[in-house]
Length: 451
Ligand code: FCB
Image (cartoon, protein in one colour):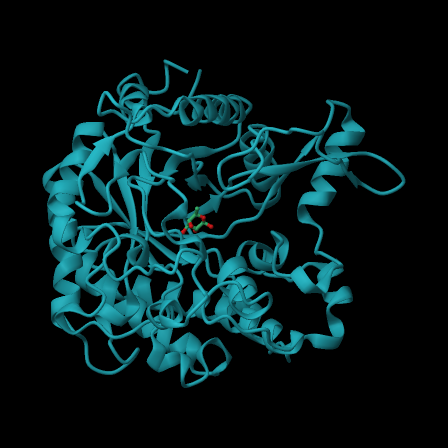
């Protein structure tokens, strides 16, 4: 019992959050480069132009991964490094960086897991309408095909989109992330549909470009739902709550089913179609067939969840006063790693990887020169025990990627949040293993036994 023998223990990052070198070797601007230059956008006034300088220090970072025993490293490709203008001529130097990174990972026995899109849309495409442009799916499919053609002789795991909930919702509905707009609802639904079409087109172009059979996945997110007690009624209430489309239109993108049903079931959810009808774009006859390409795995980023109880309708339970939370004020709810995967697997019947999970803590270097983060170790222990329970109860759960390998640029919160297993001194770029990094190393070494 426990986790599968071939369970993938990994860690994750994304291009803009770690690479730095924002204008090196021909890279074009992404909407995040530009957004960070606008005064007042980032909490601490910082940006990702240096970040962890991973572009220059990737070999050192890969050595840390190898020492930690990681089986896989999930990273993303910066689209404007490959296509500075979003389309057109390939920037070979940009591709070269990722090719070298892949070689370095493989030389250390670490499997590269490549995300094509983790939010850094090329500015050039944004100026042409971005996700609203009917050409967006084609642009993305071309870019994805180029990357797969260049790297699939050595890498076999690719993910199309990371968290469309966030880059559409936070970017264009609430305006908290780049490009910081609040668009009309109908525009946001149109974007969402184009993003899903882009996913489908990309799956086709990636399969066509692949040098060998590849595994393709998708990495959306959402708060999970879990039952407050163990009664079947509460379980049912949580399940309904988890997959419901929000009635609150100001935050409609924050849901599971609108983003996953089309991809994995080939339909939009009924309740969403009803609720959102006045704002929906025309959905072409073949659109859902295109979106519903067979994929090999279902990634899910899960950080926390909400408890539900059965009532007249499923009721979200208010958290008690002083509920445990992380430095980012996110609730600590280990149950989400049991019920999330369980509900998702029941509905979608597709192998699951937790493509992100982790916490930010107020980490500091102590007088002894070390970084003690008992809260993170406790968090991971609680969450991973729940994940193990899901696996033991028959959920096809194949891997777990800790967010993140190193502290990094946490989007609108700048360097205020430290999510890493490895502490980064952003003045000197020194990396210091937190206690949790040693713990994760032990965990991997024991194949999860020390839980
Ligand atoms: C997720 C993002 C990731 C990181 C973590 C903390 O929503 O995918 O880039 O910011 O949250």
